[in-house]
Image (cartoon, rainbow, N blue to C red; front, side, top):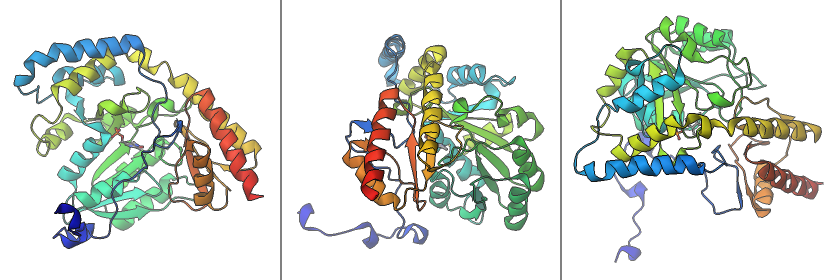
Length: 366
Ligand code: PMP
């Protein structure tokens, strides 16, 4: 019987570099207030629900056929959304920006090649590197978690990577990068430079996007997602913008028909209602700024944020505080930085619940 067999993955002939590693594992718990994966807390508005259902319905009878392998109509919609003079030829889409990042590593990384990132950054960057047989090296951040042009260029010189990951605004710190960092890394490297802009729509006014630099180099790629500002994490739609040659390169490794007709239809309908979906961004930014102010007033060490989440330190043992906050029904994220926790900005009521739970946890410590 299966239940009697005690075979674990350690007994299987998996690749050596995967031995002992852990899968990506943000807890998915059924809690009243989930502020741990930087989703958009607002449900999809009714008018957009109707549009998505109609678009998906229109595809149903045709599901006997494979979908448009090139997702042209969707990429055209994405090009219109991102602007910057980009067209369908500059855009590529996949199942979440995670898949886009994986495709980039499959085509530009792989065995014998190296990817450089500036840790702490998005935890999937090294996991995807390992999964594609790409060696991973950590660059340095300053004590305040910032990266400057000089540091970044020096790390590129030292490691000579095939791919550099920049994350702006950065997860888990919330910090956005200046374009001087992107320029310096592009100038110093011979490889691809991937700027992960999953949280771009939440940036404070005046924060530049690397989209404005795309014309400068065919080695620059900007990745984005509909999972955050568009409130569409469940649909799984991420994309990249780059030189058309990069899209030709990614086609070498993508699975045929990787984006289902249903996903393409849902995303196209969502893009047609971008204004309605993005209407929550300002409210979320207000809660983000409120969390920064409230935590600063409590004497905590708060990292300035251009994203829909806030990293804060000075809590002592973060595991204990995380657990205590969860006991109050509020799930936040322990990103593995000693003394720090990360909280997603959601609705005003969710901020109220989080602050009350955190206060309870911090009172316990006294
Ligand atoms: N990049 C960053 C920086 C992220 O934080 C996330 C999601 N947590 C992603 C990419 C991937 O998002 P998705 O696959 O949903 O597009």
